[in-house]
Length: 160
Image (cartoon, rainbow, N blue to C red; front, side, top):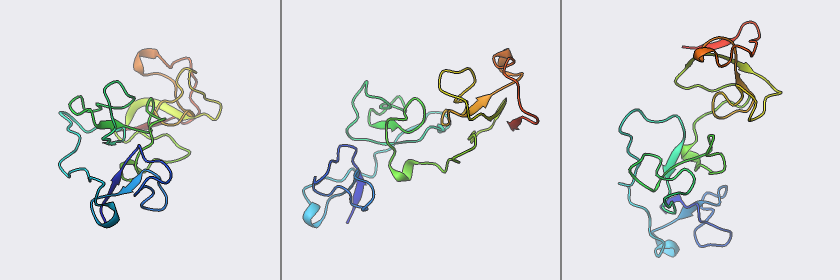
């Protein structure tokens, strides 16, 4: 039976929880779910430049002005999820990249030095450097001196 990601799914709504783990995973198009229209395969986000690091997916419930919607600037249904500032928007499992739990994550690298600081919180200078982990912190020279006042542990980390 076909299925898709439906953010509007709630408990006891027909077809929801299709995978037995995610309430938003919904059966569609066949058998008992024939009345639930499956999204067409042609629906996808379009990126005029490089594909973003921020996870995204196609959300038929998106409306202009809702958090993460219109992510590609072309399709309202294209939606960012689970990465700052879209942390409250849950990604379907297929949209989640493999992100490490206790280390900074820069899939395209960064020239700025950084380290893991367990005392970091959103709002403290340099914290949330990777856009995912509050504890990931920029430090030292680079970025036109914005983080020079934050000492780096020896040795700091830089990804090419």
